Length: 171
Ligand SMILES: *[C@@H]1O[C@H](CO)[C@@H](O)[C@H](O)[C@H]1NC(C)=O
Image 1: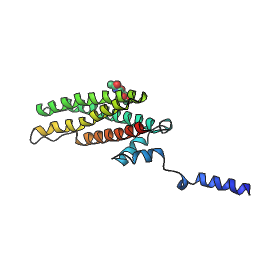
Image 2: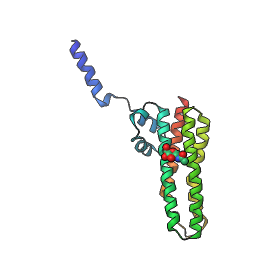
Image 3: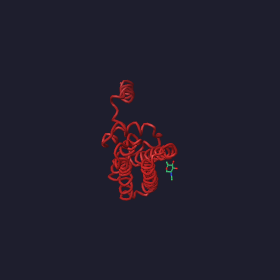
Image 4: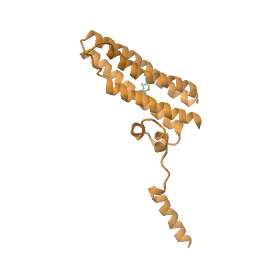
C-alpha cells in the first residue's frame, strides 16, 4: 500500500501535465509581447528564474545588450552612408541609444535596491528612444529608415522589461 502511494507521487511529479506553468510563462503572459518575452528569457540562467525580480533584471540586461548591438550597427551605418540627412539621423539615433543604454544599466542597479519608481521612469524613457530614432528618418521624403526592424524590437523589449519590473514591484 505505502509503495503504491509512493509510486503515485513519483508519477505525479514526473508528469509535466501536472506541473504548474513555469515562472517564465506566467510572467511573460502578463506582457504585451509574450513570444518575444519567452524567447528573450529562454536564455536566462537557472539562478535568474527563481523570482520575478531576477527575471526583471535579466530582461533589462537583454534589452541593454540589444541596445548595444543597435548602437554598433548605427556606428557601422555611419561609416558607409554618405547622405548628409541620413548621417544626421544616425548621429541623433546614436546619441539617444547611448542614453537608453545608460538608463537601462542604471535601472539594473536601481532594481537591486527596489527603487521601482526610478526603474519605471528610466525604462519608460528608454522605450521612447526607438520611436524618436525612427521618426527622425521621416523628416525627409524618399528616405527609408535602415533601423525600422531593430527599433521595433528594441521598443518591444523595453515594453516587456517594463511589464516585468512592474510585476516585481507588486510582489
Ligand atoms: C550596460 O550593460 C550591458 C549589459 O550588462 C553591458 O554589456 C554594457 O557594457 C553596459 N554599458 C555601459 C555603458 O555601462
